[in-house]
Image 1: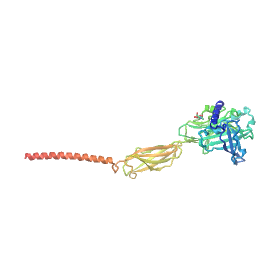
Image 2: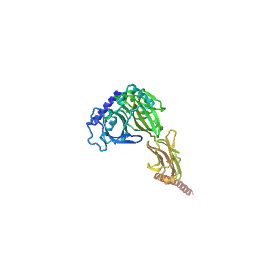
Image 3: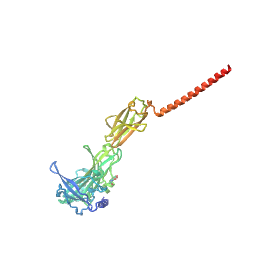
Image 4: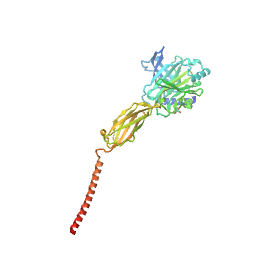
Amino acid sequence: MSNIFTLYKLALVAFCCFFIQGYACSCPVLECFFVKESSGLSSSQEKSLLHISTDAHHQPTDMPHQLPSDISPEMIYYITDPEATLCHPTLHAPRGPIQKPQCEINPFLPHPSSIDWAASLTESALRSALNPIYLQADWFSAAVQYPDRQLVVSSVMRAPTATKEPSVILSVSSKSVSVQVRLGEPALLDCSLWADPSSPLSGSGFAVEWHYQFRGNGRLVLAYDGKNDQLASTGEEGATLDFGGLHEKGNASLILREAKVRHAGTYICSVFLPYLLAEVSVHLEIVEPPSLSIYPSPLPLSFPGQVVTVLCEASGFIPLSLELSWEYKGADGNTRPLGTGSVTSHRQGWDGTYSQNTRLDLDMAKLGLGTGGEVVCVAVHPGGTRRAAVALNVIGVSSPSIEDAMAMVGVALVLYGLIKIVSWTFSSSGTDDASRDKKDN
Ligand SMILES: *[C@@H]1O[C@H](CO)[C@@H](O)[C@H](O)[C@H]1NC(C)=O
């Protein structure tokens, strides 16, 4: 894992230097709340400043000239983050204002993992004769969220006691903290890990756990022991990792083969090193627009004065956020709203998706629908707007159109002509006979 990590790191450093010349690869200074759990339930928080640099030997040249008045000089930390996860390149390009990140830093206590499948990590760390002095230092965990960049980073850092110069040992990050997929599609929940290869803790293997959380319910989705290359059985089908990418690049993203309604919720990506743990959470939303059907279809032939009832059924949608309405599209192409109709309450199907209906009474007399057109059911949903249409034919409409009138005039003229010809033919032949009779007499 380390060779590619090193290359990746160099590329990042180069990128970083290119974009922020003069700062010698340091990141923007982060304002961070230092939160300490005091005795029991109470906790105290104090503002701190984090100067982050990719290079341990880089001395902080940008000493704080104008220290904000609400930050005490003891609350300034100089962090070495070789992987630059805490100041990711996506934060520099494109340049522009970034919404202030939310940052919290806490004291961290290294402890052996209590989880069964990560226990082998602690054992192997013990076997590798880890110097306990290494753990006796000042440890911190920091969590930084950039809400507008979809980025979240969580790091565990170690500072030689009382130096205020911590180095990042373990970083877990996600570049898409909120994911939307359609039902049945594969879902990728992004999570990356980085462990300082020079730390004695990183040689003893790592473990990854994905845990699902929704309204107080939780379940283990996937647990992978990277030391022994073993996957714990969790009963969750269709959930996997890219194991090659995990070992080579630290790609711990969870792949769900086929998104189902029950997959919607929050997922926590936890990465374990012996004695250390860092985690980030990623939110998955399943969004599926409804399918629409109209009943009856086709509509019966209608006549003025009749009331026709049309039903529109929207089914298979998630989440439960739907606006149903009706429109009428006349033969002239103009569309006008017909209101919402009477919308029923929703029902939930076996697969967790919802359905909902709306019924519309079409009064031919009142609406002035002309000779016909289309009745359209419109469903507005976060997954997209859907429409279904059915043709409406109105017969025996009272006011004839210009075409009808002209046709009638035409027919009348032809009839008039025919009658004229016939009557002329008969009357002329009658006169002939009469005159002949007269001559004969
Ligand atoms: C991680 O692996 C998944 C699945 O192979 C891939 O789609 C994704 O792009 C990878 N992420 C990174 C950052 O390489």
